[in-house]
Length: 228
Ligand code: AMP
Image 1 (cartoon, rainbow, N blue to C red):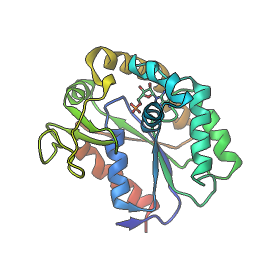
Image 2: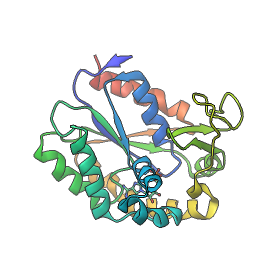
Image 3: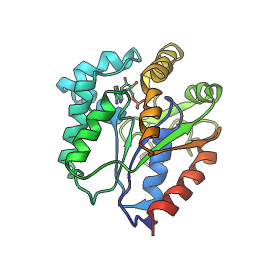
Image 4: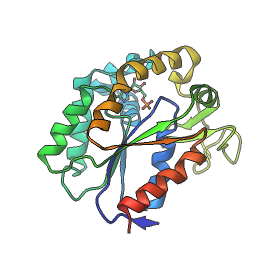
């Protein structure tokens, strides 16, 4: 495990199914002291607990839409605050937020006030046909957010989580119709963020057909630029 030499505050952009969660969990495994927030996991947790945000998000997620910007900004802003991450010393990763051109400046304004500006935006570039195939094969352990792929990263025991042995499930929004809707939303709402972060000089793109091909590139980049 490597420790970071200078704080790493990174976010991950990529189509649904591009492997953001997988890349983030591998970085957490290999670099010490870098926690992460996944906006999707946070929303699913709120749905499970039946909170006000959870009730608002449930139908939207089921239909492949996006939760309103104001709800997301306040949810993530509160989470960053509660976790004590709003300072220039903290390292962290954000997976799935921001996702629209209005969430991005809202995040900047929260971070800049506390000297915790972003210093890396990772784009995952994966061909669309690969993504569609991957979604069909994606199974999750809902409680932990652990992700399996029947082809590339199968569970040790079919249908069971490696750590807890509990049953794996399909995400309800991983069916083909909803998935198409999510891809459309990504193109319309999230792709413009590449320009936004490109202009700020923060964007680094990593390309490949599998997470195993992409991860070593990201690990090397983070190792070279942020780690001891
Ligand atoms: P994910 O696990 O990142 O694929 O997120 C699952 C779903 O949660 C998305 O399809 C959206 O409906 C919702 N969601 C997650 N993050 C955001 C966000 N930053 N803005 C709006 N909706 C979001």
